[in-house]
Length: 171
Image 1 (cartoon, rainbow, N blue to C red):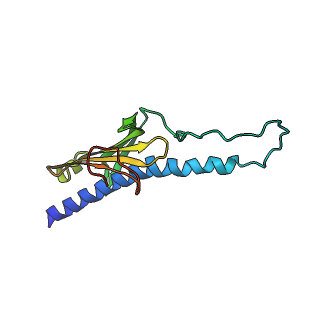
Image 2 (cartoon, rainbow, N blue to C red):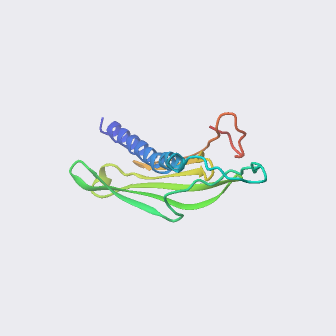
Image 3 (cartoon, one colour):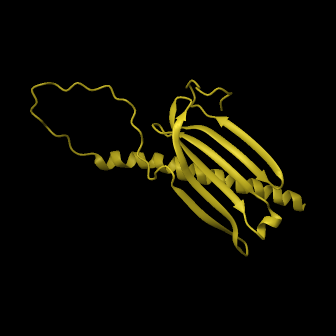
């Protein structure tokens, strides 16, 4: 029974980290990109121009982000009576080319601390690669080390109807 509780807690911790990464680095910037358009809406201006304006071919624009490469957020996790149960670190270590896409690399790491570590040893890392122009997730990696068991997984993500540029099967 004790082992089952530890495994369930490990799964919950993994889910919490994945959820925080997704929320902080994917959903918030995506929601933020719609706000400026609504705020910037102004009444049309009339200009007396001699030439009609021809719409230029619009290339996708990179979305503004509320952070820079190298920024890190550090959290201290408290649990039950333990004020220092674990640490959580969220970072944006780089912006790079991922299979032809310009992508932000986001990383989340969680580590339990003593004395909680004697009950639940967790050393997890999750990496997410998000398209810099569309904010679509392109790749998600999990590197889990929980309770003496390791698991590594890489998922290549492609929107429905889109062709994959990744060399492996897609999700």
